[in-house]
Amino acid sequence: MIKPRALSGFPEYLPAQQLVFNRVLSVIRDTYEAYGFTPIETASVEHQDVLMAKGGEDAELYALTRLNTGPEDRDTELALHFDLSIPLARYVAQHESQLVFPAVADSESLAGRPAAGRSVPGVLSG
Image 1 (cartoon, rainbow, N blue to C red):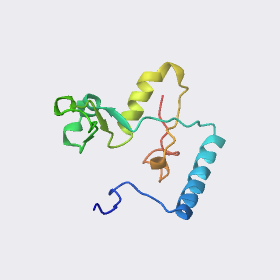
Image 2 (cartoon, rainbow, N blue to C red):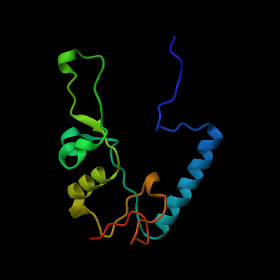
Image 3 (cartoon, helix red, strand yellow):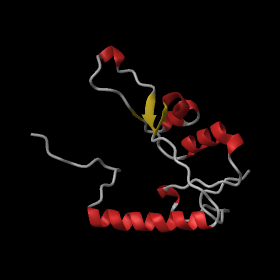
Image 4 (cartoon, rainbow, N blue to C red):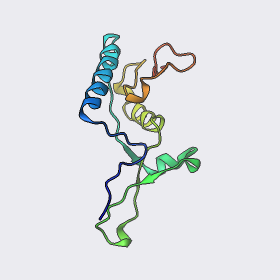
């Protein structure tokens, strides 16, 4: 029998904890939006060649594959990204003509303290 266990690094909250988390995130999003910033959403996975292109060789990558295929079909081109810098850079490069700068990336990971030299976390310079 398989014992149920959560994956390390992937938080799972009980309902009361999730409600608190959602409220905190809502305050952060509302604050960003009050200052004119709009949220963006990027995929949780990227192409492996993009993740490995610059400095990815030293990163810990988790590849995605379908388990119900034959061994010859298990090569994967996708992996979970290890931070938001690559998906954000790809997103901006892909949609540059449709974005207004400065823009902000709205994410749970940007809810912390502003980075050195930035007054608002996640602000991109144009």
